[in-house]
Image (tube, rainbow, N blue to C red; front, top):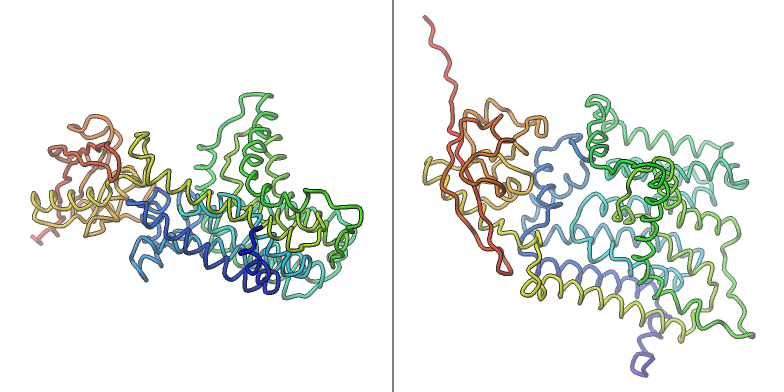
Length: 507
């Protein structure tokens, strides 16, 4: 390390808790600013959140409602697109705080900081977290569940078991993926000789009861709606093509995760290489064998569960499921390395982290600020949603003399109009009432609607929209340039004229 960096390292070593606070501030600032500056249009996940969230339903046809509610709250409170990227980073650093709190008594404050540096190398927590969605919002609840689980098993305090139940219950509202954490935690309690002792205490049952109470409103909604989101997931999942997929799909998933872990492993490399000299002894840590088993479970149990389920079912996996799987890998690596974090080793870890952090930021800038002028690749965040919303609003008003109250179209086309048009119309998603059961069709017919599409014949109403908008009158298509690059968007649109219902006069 350069001499000029030594005072910084000395300050980090002397005040690692303050260094963690500085890291958090830097992380939030950089990864909020970059998408705010380089995304001229909201990505699909946020457009979808704004379409769903305003309806305040206990459940939707795709996924649980929590992230969509949060986006709607942020929209009403702040109303600027940068706030959604800030929300994503608040969720990420809240997860970091949970992992940091869990690691402190095991690794010391400096070791906990190094554990956070390691996991910050995963693109899940920076590059792709800007697209706030269910994967991002589940992170703090997973971290809280891991923290509470460890403390509950070690201390046996009822409040920790209660916290575990709350974390698991809230996780269900975030994403159903919490099942791959709960399953290994439950098996560990049943199998591990030390963990099994807790079954003779009220703790696990309090946790179960708390989780069920928190989950109850959504569970009731699922029962009343025939587990609608699971039907959607079943439709989207890749089916098994035979015996080979029972092997190939798990291998494909572990391969993607190992690739994504490369930056984190590079950050952790100084903990293992160069190898310690003969005179260096492993550092004494307060973590005992039981602690190490718990950390190993948290680091690898959910991943093992995903692989086992994929191997048993043969169903396809999604690489982005890795978001929450590796939260505790940094803690595990520092724990098994058991190396003294002297200035030399700390300097190498910090330098590697800084290189990875800067590299990810530069890659983000390159992908969204430079390459679009050369590679001509479609990027949803360059969609001219703002221009589309304002242009359609003006054209609709010019013909009808009224603002748009409803828009009929795909989640992407209709959602962009709903967000960017001054009237913020409600969306009948895909023209299907079952996808938006909160829409009163009688009210839609009474007010009329704009119909929008960007694929197929722009002069004729798409077949899939004719069921609900058969009387719509097609208008002259128009085109808009994308916000960056040289692509253009062709837009077809139509007006569904209002049909007010008048009360029949008495005879």
